[in-house]
Image 1: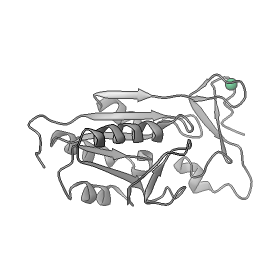
Image 2: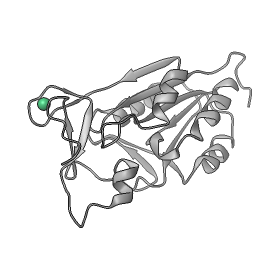
Image 3: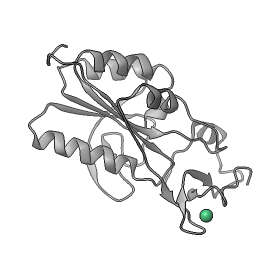
Image 4: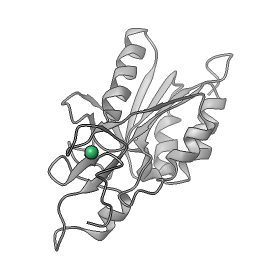
Amino acid sequence: MTRQAAPGRLQVVTGPMFAGKSEELLRRVRRARLAGLTVEIINHALDERHGTRTVASHAGMSLPARAARDVDALRALAGRRPLDLLAIDEAQFFGPGLVPVVNELAAAGTTVVVAGLCIMLDGHPFEPLPELMALAEDVTKLTAVCTVCGADAAFHQRTVTGPHADANQAAAGLIGGAEAYQARCRRHFRPGE
Ligand SMILES: [Zn+2]
């Protein structure tokens, strides 16, 4: 795995929904490809918003990606060839087991860019992103725009409740797009509703 003499880096791109995390991830991937680097994009297989073979931003940008069901599958995909840059989207779905894997990859010379939610629907931190933020060389914390007042939004909440609100999805943090969730500022965040 040691392609470069120097170790890689861990970069984290995080925030609530609608903050542009995937867009920022894809921007970095495009730059790396222009520079001639070897790049792989891995998404969690759970995110089927746009099909599992693509990482797409809400703004409409998309690039082909490989889908991994869990950390072991991610490790296997990442280990198939030496990578200069590994981009991981929807990282919150991989759970705490993601931390040692990205540490290993970075130590072996790969720059790992991890994008994912750092905040849950109830307003609490969403591991493993907070831990990854602590361990990273570089953290980009993005905010969205509050749908009520337009202020910086560090939270998101569900707008659809009732029989269609799946408890597992809610616990995981969310699958779905703009129709089911809204970005909210601290003043307008109502986690209980
Ligand atoms: Zn607001």
